[in-house]
Length: 164
Image 1: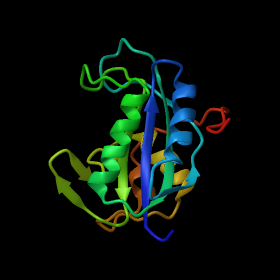
Image 2 (image 1 turned 90 degrees about the horizontal axis):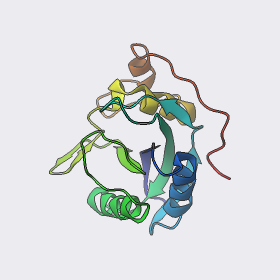
Image 3 (image 1 turned 180 degrees about the vertical axis):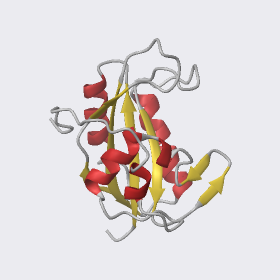
Image 4 (image 1 turned 135 degrees about the vertical axis):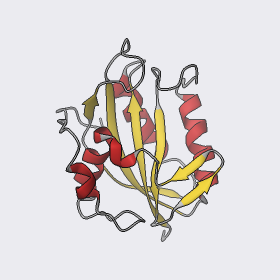
């Protein structure tokens, strides 16, 4: 498969987060016209939203896809729902969150979809795992991802493997 390189951010802080992330990686391999290339370690981070919720487990996966961005988004949202995702509160706890961080080297602004993810360079739980699997990555605006990491607090990867 030729396709486009796509980076996805995965996060969970409910319903056995490690199991949620592992199930998501397995399910991503079943998305039509997509192939899993690599994945990061798992990172832990505090919640961005309401403080009274568990810490998050986060990871980034690299895929190759021939799907159009909106079609890919539809598959990801179906996957989130199949794993119990319910949108109750912005930045609230969730069983699974999957964000399209980057799609090829494209900048996309559509209702419900912005690529690169608008908060990508402000979130250490996305930048660090992305750097782990793509250390030389250049964003569509020409900025190097490593430059984004300079101003962010470092977080550490856990010793938990993403694949079981």
